Length: 328
Ligand SMILES: *Cc1c(COP(=O)(O)O)cnc(C)c1O
Image: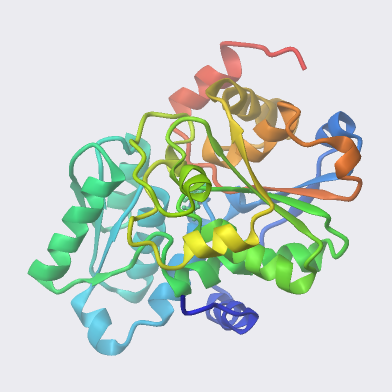
């Protein structure tokens, strides 16, 4: 593996300057009371395009040369990466094609079209979308910008870790939503480089968690993609994974799994207690806390939950926040 270093993250930070939001880190009195330790939310849900994916996308686009920009870019996506690429491409006046499966919610597809990108819907899994993207590289000569397994993408996401350390230097534990692992790898690299005693935990859903299953197996494995409230966490890690699998293996202290029920409760909690609109994938850290997966005795210091996005279908959100009240 061509290892990434802290220098790559600071280089990414320069490329992101003025193009992405330095998102707030806010204290949550309610969650702090539950675990009896200070809990903070890193609100990437407030990022432009509604998720952190703009960081990796912006850094990847910044590295394109003039000839590549002329050719245009293609990406396979569960929605948020595509939206970020579409945004970054529009900024540069570049052609962008976004390949998605039928599992991607309509609100995400619509937002990508609204940014002027071409959309192709193909198959029932992220792997199918990936195949279509590869076909377009061969056919149209487009440049592939992968959603997670790419050094520039990982470095872009890692700038979140730099910010967390600056905003809360005595951070003890960080919970990061985990799918392909670009977000986790970047943040964990930043934090473990700054202070190796910081605990970095990946959080993912019980249904179809490819990285968790791969870490257990010791190598990338195929996991069937199923529907989940955390739709942005769907998809495999790639059997030919080069970067995020070894980084997640080496930099994660543990992986936590949350049920659909707890994800629903977390979206509900985010709205009523934190006054934040959060999509399922963005709420898994809150879900882990609410489900009691963080043991208070083992975690005395400040805990940071990375809230990764807010691009939830608003009808679904409405149902989650109004149809049930959860005793807490
Ligand atoms: C993509 C995404 C994730 C997971 O990021 P990976 O780098 O694939 O692990 C988490 N939350 C949201 C909102 C996302 O869009």
